Length: 167
Image (cartoon, rainbow, N blue to C red; front, side, top):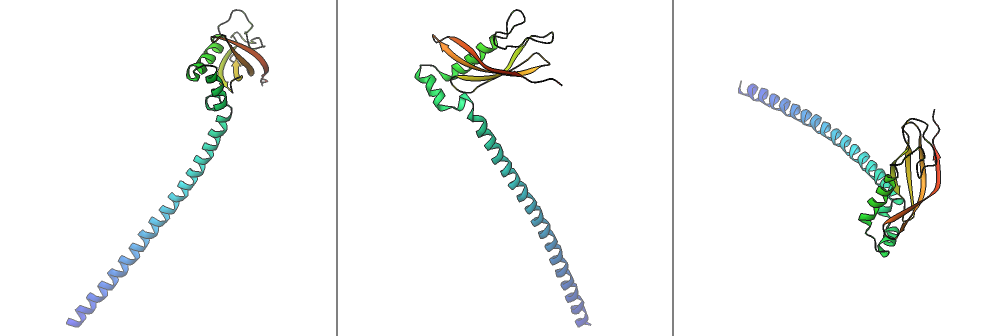
């Protein structure tokens, strides 16, 4: 009788060990698959970050704030670039306050009741900038050169322009 009890206990212990082994193996495989999925996501995110960093580098190519030779040009002339960049943009935005139908820079007349306004500006370097304009319905862009005269006056010269066709 004692032998049978030990035999049943031994069988129960073996079954318990097998159950524990299978259960642990399933849990381990589940964790490994989750880790593999997470690692794949991390790799995808790394690729996305690298692609976005490349795009940021491309955007910096034609931007005065990241163009060291252009900034040096201004510094050699005695200008503070941190003050000069907003000054140039403000002077161009001031041209949005005009009388009549003709914008001082944009060579188009508004085809709506609204005035043509310069919306955004990107300083390309120490000589050129690009700006987009709109009257609310029609959109376009202008390429301008600019020159600082006597330290406080800006002169803009229209180099090119276009308006997008409307549908």
